[in-house]
Length: 434
Ligand code: GDP
Ligand code: GDP
Image (cartoon, rainbow, N blue to C red; front, top):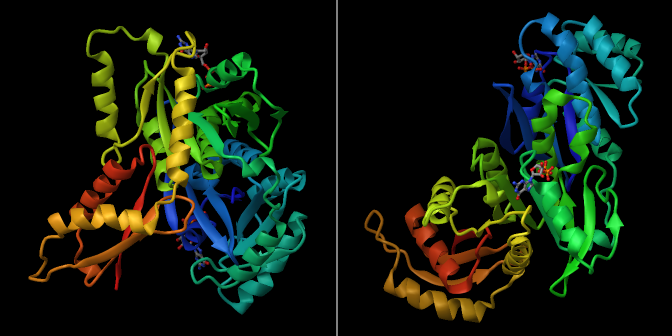
């Protein structure tokens, strides 16, 4: 987990085609840079059991070749800074272009695995033509055809081979809390407030993952790693990509986290970018705590907090069972409550309900409210169990699983939440044939 692979190359070489072939699920990352909305694509893939995230950094380099000149540095720089390996894609149909050479110049200096993929090699003639790409000085290349997948297996074998091992040290065994959110939401301040005041800190470990600062932390008799996603952006040379960097950093931190503390600036609200991060965490089945920071800046009347909370809950439907805490890092208000809540969410996410207890509670509820008949058929749920997965998943065994509709699944989920407390924890429910 945690490895990021970036695809770079000029427009129309086939990056998106390749990307779409590989990923199981597409996550568009919307990046609003000075009013422009760009789509970059991020998805997950695995090959021979090794998982990695794939970004098509070129998603935004559309249009004519002359805009490319200035965009290319940025695109490659982004890949160099963020990725663990880079796939540089070129097109055998057009042959080596000056832009390919320019990219190759940048990539030759990189200290990360670079795999040269010569795309659109659909026939033997093109296979012979591909030889000219040796001139890029990047060594062996991989002839592929993204449209039919030929050659991609060899490329992926080499990619997996080249990816760094994801560290499996002692620290990574500790629960990981990621502090995520937009730039300036107050993430660093939040972490500083915790660290500055607390006597229980064990050590500072710079860069357990390369680009975030992990702080080992001990509170309430509970030890965990705090993952700061704010630090690195200050080093970034590409100012326009600041927002995108912060999202990318969030992506990586979220994937490696158990619980995400989503910090937002109360004066800016739960806007689109914050929502992106929220749903990323939810889809990755991570525990979530929403921290509305800078509450000191908001003019308050009797119901301000309630109303603010209601607005957020509407945005996060149907996953509304999430703790929302109003904090002010500046005034040290509820900062520790935030951590306490994260610990609680972590524990809920890890808990395993015994099959006996689960059935004792759920079967009477189901008996009182059975699934409605569908197409004249009656669904009989016989028993249920929690699956032995890192995050809560439940299987309900019945005669006709295909007839259980979404509203009933939601009903079951709500009951599970009421009875067993999964606040802040995404849960999955499956109906299986028995
Ligand atoms: P991107 O701009 O680099 O993302 O390129 P796209 O993935 O949008 O592909 C550009 C064009 O090349 C599309 O018309 C694709 O259908 C075509 N293309 C992509 N891969 C192949 C391939 O393996 N063989 C051929 N002949 N065409 C391809
Ligand atoms: P990050 O980019 O998310 O790490 O945000 P920072 O921690 O750097 O904070 C951004 C700005 O918001 C800084 O000027 C902080 O002093 C300020 N800030 C952080 N928390 C609060 C708060 O609770 N109240 C107020 N008024 N300002 C805050």
